[in-house]
Length: 129
Image 1 (tube, rainbow, N blue to C red):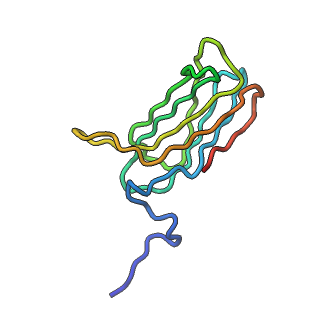
Image 2 (image 1 turned 90 degrees about the vertical axis):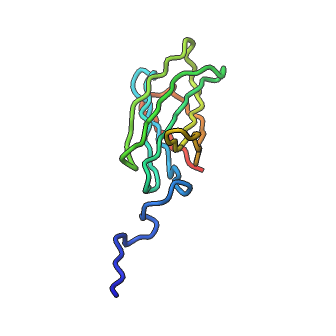
Image 3 (image 1 turned 90 degrees about the horizontal axis):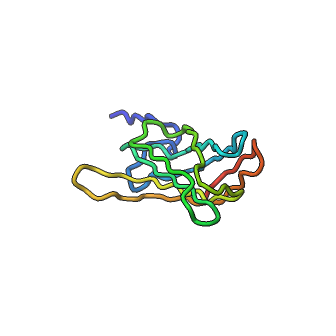
């Protein structure tokens, strides 16, 4: 019998839901300092995960939320608007990978959290473990 491998690198093989992780979360500060691009780099997956991103200012107030429902891609980016009433330079970004099925509870599989400074447009940040 022939052994067929569809993936040359075993690290690139799709993973089951409990093994799906953020490899990296990239942040880019847009001009005006009120928008950030959030780049997601996720391990390959079998089942499509959902993602929730929250941004809080230094006062702990919500500045933005983003939800991606069952992403198709493991590498993509989206833009978030910072909408807190009193803008600050420092923000905490928290991203959670999770799964949810009808009539079942949400299962969080991985969370990354980091601090960013939006005082300089064009600045880039990388959040990893």
